[in-house]
Image 1 (cartoon, rainbow over the protein chains, first blue to last red):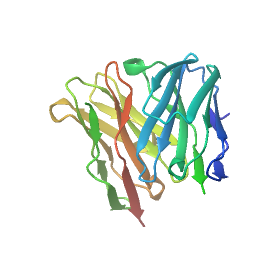
Image 2 (cartoon, each protein chain N blue to C red):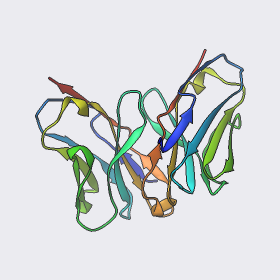
Image 3 (tube, chains in turn green, blue):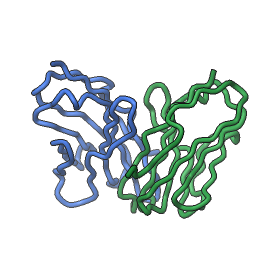
Image 4 (tube, each protein chain N blue to C red):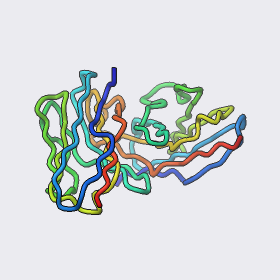
Length: 115
Length: 112
């Protein structure tokens, strides 16, 4: 069973479209995250949710909106896609936050290409 | 602000050779420390972590890392590299009251 699963794995779309990426974890973790990995492999946190509540919202355009219907799911919706949004988006989960964080479990990533 | 550096962007070693990947952090307190590996087209997998206690920690796939407080370092080592170890390696730290900070990554290539 996949611990953190993201769908879709690949997403190619045109500029201006709206798209969603879904993430689910079956680990019973209480915190979930979205990270963006750019072409230089740099990982940057976007959002963090703890028990369905937003706890981290880094400087991300408001075209990006996370939604957490329950603590096992954290979806990412992106409006009006731009070329610069092309990247790999990783979902992750952890037990605890801050220095009670015992390490992330990552999904396999969603490669978003905006054309 | 806290930061994590991995001085080597790309390292190439021969199969069977030993490996050391460097990681340094800058901040006053001792953080929790992690190493992750990302194989091509894959997500990140946790190799090992250090919270406290013995400064030499063992991880999966034959990796180990040593925490040196005086050098603010957490270097990853493997005595004999296998071709399947070719991947991107990320050091990560979490400081009190903060969230994870990832280093920029080191790409490992393995020559046959």
